[in-house]
Amino acid sequence: MGAAFSETTRGIRVSVEPYYLDDQSQPEEGRYVWAYRVRIENKGAETVQLVRRTWHITDARGRTQHVHGAGVVGEQPTLEPGEAFEYTSGTPLETPSGFMVGAYHMVVTTSGERFDVAIPAFSLDVPHEGRRLH
Image (cartoon, rainbow, N blue to C red; front, side, top):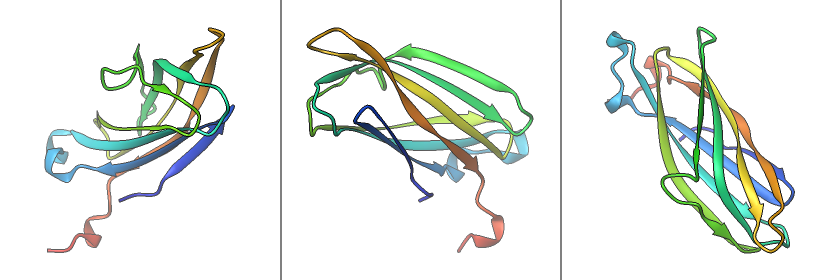
């Protein structure tokens, strides 16, 4: 597994752990695939719901895809204080490295107040071939 990246905004801690999917990647065809495991923890005092997400995915050539959508993995999880939600997703790139950064758009369930939670920037890198064990 790779390194974990984390950031906290207004009591909501987002941790991301990316890892390269060798079996789904086809480097000779310019297809590199990563998965990333995300853990969203509510360390604050308010119950919040994750309603939307925004991602910026940049490859080694500097091309950036902007991804917007409702919730995550088909869900719009509600997190009470002390609760956490985890999911795994993935992204393909045409280059052997890149990075992702984004935001989760949250709403406070009691007041309807909206705020954004930063998703920490994390790098996507193909592990060095020499490290592979057979």
